[in-house]
Image 1 (cartoon, one colour):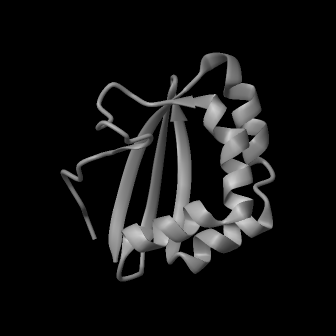
Image 2 (image 1 turned 60 degrees about the vertical axis):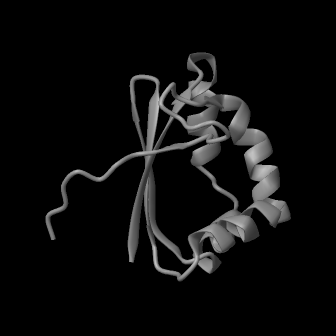
Length: 107
């Protein structure tokens, strides 16, 4: 299993919209996440930062993320959510959600 933590900023004027969208994530989007071997996915808010965490239980995260990006329901979902976000300064070129370094784990 691989743990992934990511950060993106939320546009302040879109915060209420972002919260509302996540009150009813479409089942096809959730199903695609599951079929891409993603579990225990959560998003947290602090100030204008969104922090996401998920556990990846597959063998090829990049391939599963490509499947997700090709999924029509997911693409429609992103069409709604992406305008609410903006990358953080720490994001690598071309990276939307910046991947955070794990510095501690207690199991």
